[in-house]
Image (cartoon, rainbow, N blue to C red; front, side, top):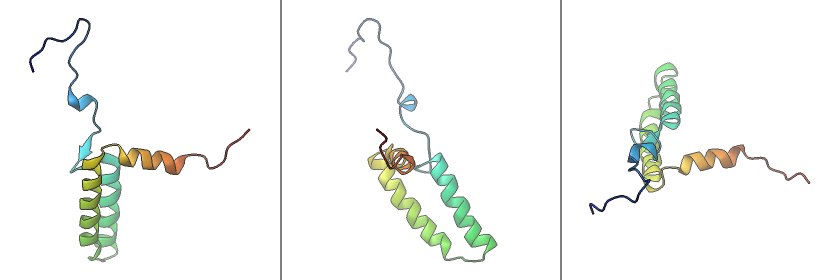
Length: 86
């Protein structure tokens, strides 16, 4: 396990290659999810949004655990152009 690295190579920390997660979700998704849940729960007095938001959070965290870049690729697929130009 403690094999010396080949000449010209340096160890790379895992934090430099994996996305930054907040409570198991990508940062932008966690903020978007919980701000919308807070808006429903506090401003509109729809308290039923909190358990639904928690369930969505758990499902998204499980998907992120399986593939940390899943939501990045979904976002890129949704923003991609739908037609091909010659």
